[in-house]
Image 1 (cartoon, rainbow, N blue to C red):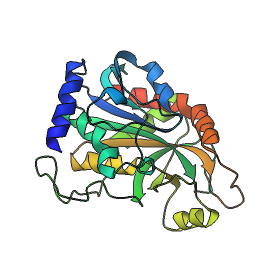
Image 2: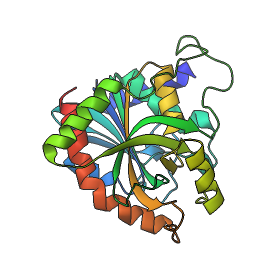
Image 3: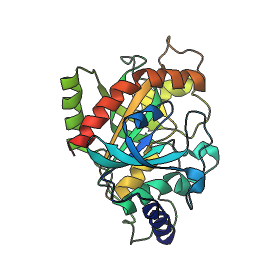
Image 4: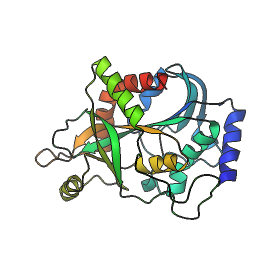
Length: 269
C-alpha cells in the first residue's frame, strides 16, 4: 500500500498541492465550507491515481487545496463509504495520502441522526468517542512502515482540539454539544429498535462514515477533531420519515456555524 500512497502523493505534489498543514473531510450537505477556502488547486477524484469515485448525492467528489483560516489545507469535498461497495482500505486511502502530503491534524464532519433525547435537529455535536459497527480498516496484513499492528485507541479524538473548539464556539456564541458517534454500514436509515439499541450501548448520534477515517488517522499518528451535525432524530416519539434530501437540507442549515468553528480552530493550530 505504501507504494500506492507515495505514487498518489507525488501526483498531487506535481499538481501544486504542497505541504498542507491540515486535512479536512466534508460530509453530506457540508461541502459549502469550501467556499471559505481560497482555492489554489481543485482536482476531481476521477483524475487522481488510486482514488475511488464518490457516488453519493451531496458529495461533489473533488480534492481542494488552498488557504483556510490562514493555513494551507487539503479538503475532500465528499468522502467514500463502505455502502458504495468500497472496501475499508479504499474508503480510508485518502487519509493516508493526506499524511504523506504532510498534514499535522485531520478535521472531519458528518451528518448524523441523534439518539440522545436532549438533542435537537441542527445541533452541532463535537465527537468525543465512537463505537465502530463497520469493518475495521486495519484488518489484513499490516505494513510496519505505515503504522503499528495494534494502535492504541484510548484517545481517538484529540482532547486539546476539543477544548479549543469548545472555547471558540463559546466565544462565537454558538451552542455545541458533545457525545459518542456510532458508525454503521448503511445505506439504510435505522429502525426504531436499532435506534433504541444504539442508545442503550452508549451512542449519542449515529451515521455511516467517519470512524474508519479516525481509526486510520490514529494508525498513522495524526490527531483528529470531528463534528456531527444532527440532521434527524432517532428518539422514541420523535422519529420521522427520513430521506437523503432531508438530511442534506438539515446539514446545510447548520453548516455556516460549523464552518466558523472549524476556521478558527485550524487558525489556532
